[in-house]
Image: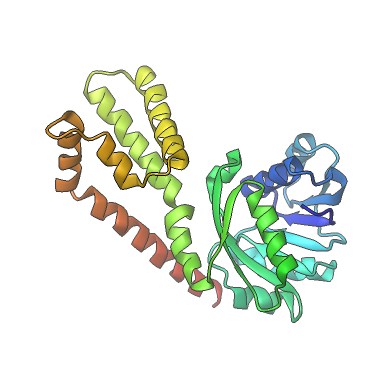
Amino acid sequence: MEQASLTIIGGGNMGAALAHGLLRGGLAPDMLTIVELSAEQRKVLNSTFPGVHINESVQKCSAAVIAVKPGDAAQAITDAVKAGARTVLSIAAGVSLATLQKAAGDGVAVIRAMPNTPSLVGEGAAGYSMGSSCTENSEKFAADVLGSVGIAVRVEEQQIDAITGLTGSGPAYLFYIAESLMAAAQEMGIDAELADPLVRQLLRGAGVLLAQSPESPAQLRERVTSPGGTTAAGLASLRSSGVGEAIVEAVRVATARSREMGAEAQK
């Protein structure tokens, strides 16, 4: 991304993941600052990011990423704007653009985003929405920051809660499926030491195939499902157990909870 004095407020997993991505993308270390309150975590960050400024408080900057807990987001934005930030991207779950803009003040470009944990390995999927003061440069900033750790798509703010329920929470659904597959393997006589790498590679391989194939998920499923075969029998069991409906319901209730969290954050 274009060289700028960028501050990431919050040096936890997601803040650190974005720092890694931005540095891989060419941002000079001395143009990046990470603000972290925990002295212990600052030590970790100092050893992880040589050349990056690791501070306890917000210093002068032109743009900021807010990677703190939702309840701390408004104060973090206020601090960033006081330090000179004119563009602020928040990944605080449930905090609305209206709340972000109120904390930032008029004329500051605010962006609300929801990344997910695969960002930690550069394979994230994020949605972002733009505030009323945003420009083309603001959108480029959001795309550069979030795109440094995966893919990023612009959505309307009313879709952010659904993005949260789908891709934000989605990795946990897949990890739960992995747990269940490992348990099934052990029930079928495959010990845990052998089941673990098999299940991990199963999900990795299927994911890569899905990502790289021009075919739809349904077409890929049909290709591996021979009539009367083992896969057909397994899928029939999943359907009869309502697994598909349960996954849809999981996304629905996670979306509803995201909306509730947003309402709670504005009280």
